Amino acid sequence: MSVIVLNENLEKVEEQSLPEEFKGINPHNLYLYVKAYLANQRAGTAHTKTRGEVRGGGRKPFRQKGLGRARQGSIRAPQWVGGGVAHGPRNERNWSQKINKKQKRVALKYALNEKSENNALFVVPSIKIESGKTKDAVKFLKNFPGFRDYLIVVDDMDEKTYLAFRNLPNVYVIYPEELNAYYTSIYQAVIFDSASFEQVVKG
Image (cartoon, rainbow, N blue to C red; front, side):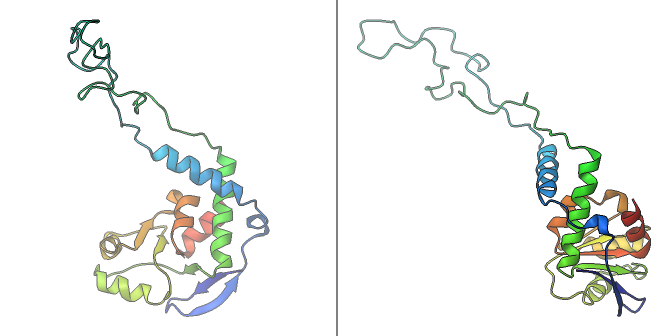
């Protein structure tokens, strides 16, 4: 249960413990945050028309009695092909959920602590791929074997580093202010540079 600290050569130097405030947190906080985060990402654009909104159907299709058929008032009723939809999705619905700042912070602390328990939380002095080449980014990640995907948190990202990691589908690079419990929990390994780690732990 520790943060693995590496040097400039990406060799393990020491293991640090997270502050006590990161421990003993109820995991339900992470569940509530992720639930709210995903709900807030919903576009809510799915929309169906009711029988009153579908074009046509103003005239009664056939007379009420005498034909032996079920009575019908409009060819745009839900049981007709081309009719309105009953109980379909409407874009008036608001899917957003509120979650307060304190719970956001607590959820992030729990997610980071969970990563440290799985030995999947790393801190390096800096993360820069000066060549801007993807093959050098892959070489950098080979120092962190055994993980499906990586979340990289950098305090200062230059264009070359961004270009190097951009084409890797299993890597996501963000700034520390963008870090949240959802990103932390869905990626198997989290790699910080020292400046961003200090900012997240103190913040």
